[in-house]
Structure formats: C-alpha cells, structure tokens
Length: 183
Image (cartoon, rainbow, N blue to C red; front, side):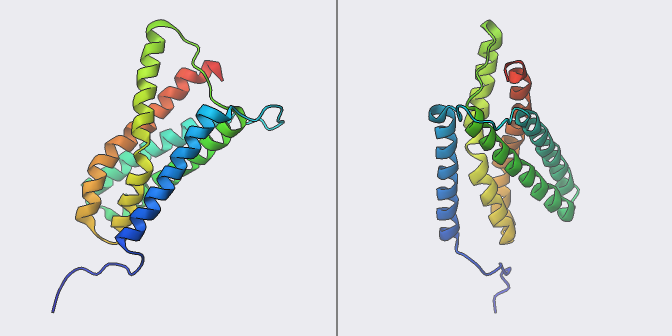
C-alpha cells in the first residue's frame, strides 16, 4: 500500500499549464495593445487620473504582504503565510485591473525628465516591465502547486517568483513616484 501524499482532485497539470499559458499570453497581449496601440479613449468623460496613486498603494501593499509572507514561512507559520500570499495576490490582481482601466482610458504616460534621470528611469522601467511579464504565470503556478500540496514544486517556483514579484511591486511604486509630475 502506498503512502504517497494525497492531492486534491481536479484538473491535470497539463490542463492547468495550458490555462496558465493562455491567460498569461492574453494578459500580455492586452497590455501590449493598450500601451503601444490603443492610445486611450479620446473625448471620454471618464476620469481615472486618481488610479496611478491607488495602483502605487496596491503595489506597496503587495510588497509589504510578500515580505510578511516570507517571514511567516521562515517561522513555519504556514497558516499566516497562506493568508499573506493570497492577500498579496489579491492586491496585485486589483493593481492589474486598475492599471488596465487607467491605460484603457488615458493611454500611456510619458516621462518628461531628461539626461541621467531619464536614463535611470528607462533602465528601471525596462527591468520592471521585463520582470513583470513572469509574475502572472509564476504566481498561478505557485498557487497551483500549493493547492495540490506539492510543496517541493511550490518551493522551486517561489524561489524565483518571490524576489521577482517583490522587485516588481517595489519598482512599481518607484515608477509611479518618478512619473507623478507627468500625470
């Protein structure tokens, strides 16, 4: 008789990974379209200029919750870890919805600085954007493996996910602060 750990019944890994890929590519395609091609809704009365500040707060909240979740798991408090990580995911998901809404209405915000400050901004923004692409699929994979109670696989994903997600959350706040004069 086998004593292998039981996992919740449900979709297979293959089904999950297909779902994860379709969702992640769709989100990336929508963001790309909004930022590069859409240009905002001209002539609309909808005003979401408050959203960048809300989004910065959501990013800061996610960063704080990520650190709290890391501390909780290091202290072997899986119950608190789970609460903090689900909360960080919720904050990041709300950020994404707010980010999409803002850019759908107002289009992209251009940085108006020059010289070394502009170079620093562009380097920070490039690293933020490139790393942010991996957050959604890695988050979903981490939640999937945790839900299935496959903690060795969960840990392999989160070794990469945690520093990337934390960096993206913190640099999201910094990007907001650097862009603030230009909203």
